[in-house]
Length: 139
Image 1 (tube, rainbow, N blue to C red):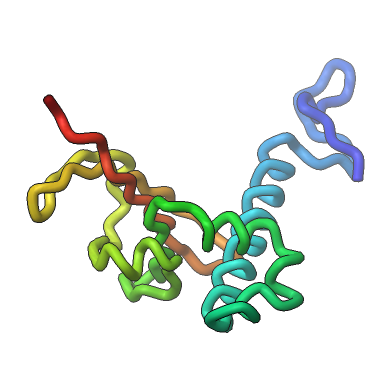
Image 2 (spheres, helix red, strand yellow):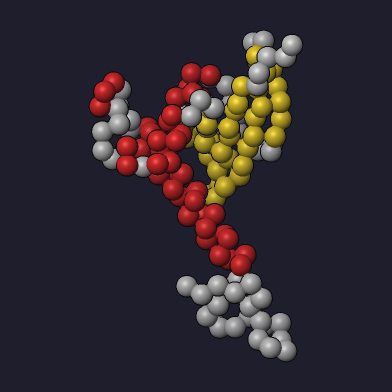
């Protein structure tokens, strides 16, 4: 695949046939990344417990490994606000919501958190990825 950032012939603003704009290329990459993320969350929903929890193919999927082993809560919400997937930290924490506020801080049960969200898309379906990180205690 050939990529061009200008996409124009000399003396015109029209894109050349057979070229892909940088915007289109970025959109394809973003959709592919979202599809990889969805695949990782789907693997996590089938994850076992105990010593066999990382039997193949789980240990061979770096995104699933990262999501499962990270201490920050990760939730994936569907377009209708339904919780589709969550990692173990998110399940243990038990908080989260489907809105797409890009960044905020909040308190819950005497603990402080930072919450960040990202809207993403794959196969014409919108998702919201939510990450919740516990902040250090003040003072």
